[in-house]
Image (cartoon, rainbow over all chains, first blue to last red; front, side, top):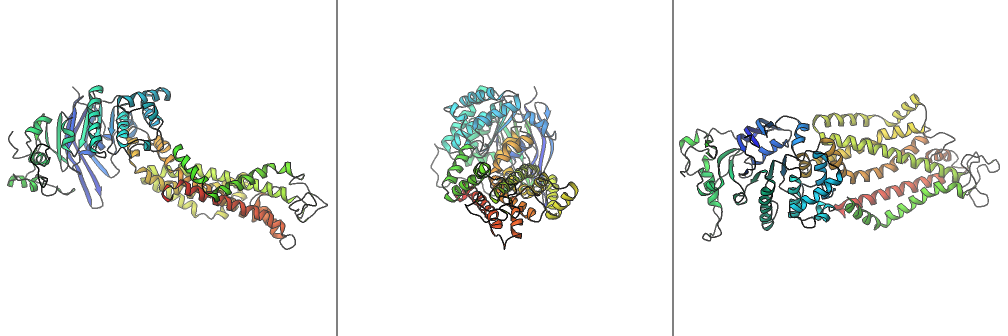
Length: 321
Length: 281
């Protein structure tokens, strides 16, 4: 079976006045059809840049190498016209901030319809009625009225629903949700996650959920990748990852998640230290300075991601499951 | 956009100076078209009995006549019409060229932007008067040439303004979202960039009209613009200036039309800027 998206040794770096900064360091990953992949990591770990590269959204000073194949076709270095046939229709993206990701001077209906007119070549009138139906499917109340409204007339949660509707218009095979709930308040977050779950069941597309919040990813993802300093440190089935984390970083992250049922703590647990500065070239394990299990070997040899396709870890001394 | 446009229109209406300016502008425009029905004279006929007549209600020459006995009321209206037409036409040319040029340079950026902006700098380094004289020598004198010459230079600043605005709009997330939706460069520039820079563009275009009218008057004053027997405010003022001591009305009548016209256009442009600039409101 051809994976929906297959990233192979992808490297993304940004040139800079003084040298270059490595954002993504030889990341390989695969997404199967209809799979939901969670991608977790802190700010600057490179989780978004992988998909920016896939969508051709990297800024001009980025250098990319490796390969990103979507349904078997290479996406890197194919040029905008080729990419435009795929992005927005088969491969779509939901952005972090729905407040700024809709064009302010066009009505919701026009923006939704335009995607279908451009990609499917259907007439405006049909596109508009399809747009109305799509809004209904993402549970936007009064969809007919919304079509004639401007983005600023809608609330944040509503706008994110519009963004989700937009990503689904051409029946994509992969939707990338880049921190889809970060800009929303907690109650709305839960609704949006619930909607993503429902939509996944209904449309059967693969979904990538990028987040710095394990809790957001927990209920939705089949499989979770944990990223640290530009590379994947652990790849596991979601339940396994929560029950038996193998990389010390994952274990620390889980330890830092406050529990509703657990004892009340005066201070929330934190992870000591800082991630390596971007641009530092590391011979050692990037997590070694913050790791309680680090040994001499960790400081001289960088561990590679190893294991079966459902359980990989990049650590010399993984936690025993 | 119409939510925003309604809001701007409301703010413009609550600005008394701008409303008055618009009223006066409308009155002047209507007058230039109604002139032939109000006055028994026309702008070309020589009245041998009233050469260089004073203004007054005794004869039908309410604003007097010039030194060839032509009715100054009608000549001033004809001149105003020509001046407004040149102002509008050249502004439209500078608007179309400037907006497309600036939006393309700003959106594509990089080397393209660099080359396009250098070309603008070279063009704006050309001495304008020399350029116009040069064109008239090659192509002869014509009104269309004047439109072209003024429009050709007027778009430079417009292109700079649009480029600057485009550079900031380009960074906004909805542009990234549009790229991610598979929109091509042309579609993004037309549908997502240009409508978002249109506010400052409209304001600048409104303020361009009086500049161009003034510039045309200046060229006509030097004898490079509209030729006899046609008239623009500039040619009338030039004629009037020659007779200033003997017949001051020949200067004062077209002069005050020009002053009022420019004042109203500028007040209107300022009002429009205040109405569209949400930050200052």
